[in-house]
Image (tube, rainbow, N blue to C red; front, top):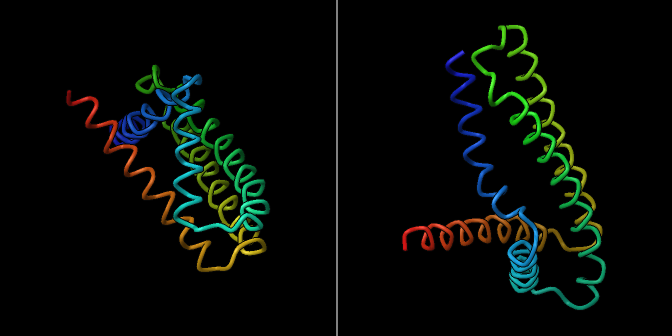
Length: 148
């Protein structure tokens, strides 16, 4: 049971940054705009590539976000009553979590193929690297702001 609590606590902590960003308004819009610029620059997209790529990417992002929202909802639903869950209830929650993680992987696999239809494979690799780099940079900047 302590492992379950530790896992859920860790996942909630990791999602807190996302929740702060999801407040909507200018911060989320600003972050999204920065991300678009960052990815466009890193991928060196031509106007034709960008026209084909961004609709696919936006669908990909939306599907991933819906999946992550389901995970957040699941975690929040049980965050206050972890100690009261029976072993079988906790196992069910873990199965749901695993199912959502599997769905996330399936979304990524599906869109990998979709991205390859509109971009060369080298740029698809650069996309995943750029997303990772953007997240790392965003976290670094947020950390710097908190340290002030």
